[in-house]
Length: 67
Image 1 (cartoon, helix red, strand yellow):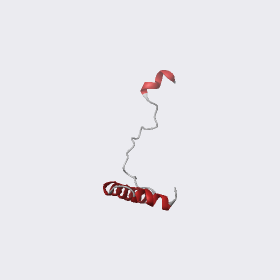
Image 2: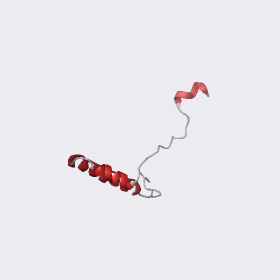
Image 3: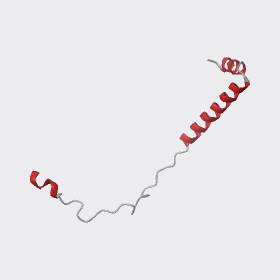
Image 4: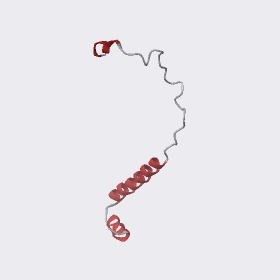
């Protein structure tokens, strides 16, 4: 559908439906703008957020019979 055909179709709609089309176009613009504003990840951002115990790498007692 060309731009002219689309404009003709929209202009033939009642006023309340034209307002819905206008709202939908605004939503699509907002959606596109929102997707393109992704922040770049920062290295080390979560440093210190997680704590590991000293015995993290030790074998688990639950698996003794399998070892």
